[in-house]
Length: 273
Image (cartoon, rainbow, N blue to C red; front, top):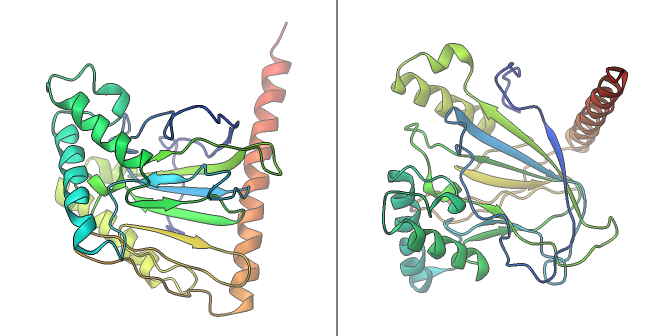
């Protein structure tokens, strides 16, 4: 998708499983930005491998600060409050709501609670797990600054569904080593080019700064919520050939991750005395 080879300083793709926790808060692991502990990370991909019902199963990826069409004037004050809380947390060095208690800012804990309450009340954008759905979002904007709209977290899984819980694959993209040593302006241009590269792709048109795309049932939807812009939906699959090729690319990616996991376990066992 990014036409950028993986490098040794990027975290390997990871498969995750979330067990049902019906009694837990909606965001049991808290909310965070993906630059938390990884300052050179600029984009994240999440591939859902199971489907959960939005009401009974939830397990959504919640973006409480994101702008969604249809909220109108009623939703704007709440979003402004959420964005202000996210910005204040970032300014005092907090990238995860769990880190607010130890921050120097006396308002950090209160701001973290504002974001968690936003997730609990389904504010912003909620992307529900659907097998085959791919979510791509950027942690930084075209100026290279951290985007407060990208604060997110996984909602609690409320029921087991057909797979016993929620399975998903997560991939992170980080600035290449050569770009990291360049100026802030060059780093910003690199991120801007990557976003523009996604926009130009026919099968996946990146809708800045976050979009989700569904690659099954013969259609694809994108969600746009940049500041001052409304969510848009577009059909971005123009042919059955593109759909078929993309499906197989996703399948091969999953098989590759599973193969790496099996090999790692084999090596670990072989090293035992």
